[in-house]
Image (tube, rainbow, N blue to C red; front, side, top):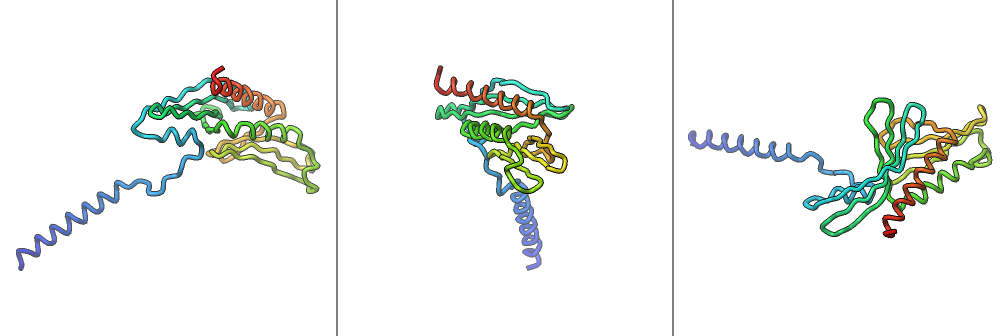
Length: 193
């Protein structure tokens, strides 16, 4: 009986170590699902994914640069293609912060920018407002104003930015131009013209 006791203790220690090692390998039991079709396609494993890009242009916004890049992702095993854009925001010497926007969101984004460019004090009888639009991946564009100072301003931010960047009406129009240009480029690729 005394000989069996050390063996049982040793077995218990080994099983405990194996159990702890297997738990240590589980890094994320609830991974976040990709927000866009482009991001979902890029999570395919065991296949070749081709990610094509073409810059649509960029604008300067205060101390930052906002760029728009056309994207076409292809899963070569099924020839599935997804299209959209990447909005990149580079502030100062920081790395670029990019947000993917699916092709089917572009028309709504352009319509939102048109709406914001015409927004005025009739949207609410109250003294201030904050109107915003958010894409599936968390890119946010907003118009806000206060009758106390009499101004209406615009802002944008990615989902990882804690604070938005303020844009002038002219910069908002330039950003819309980049989106429309990217949309036309993607239209020509999708239709093969």
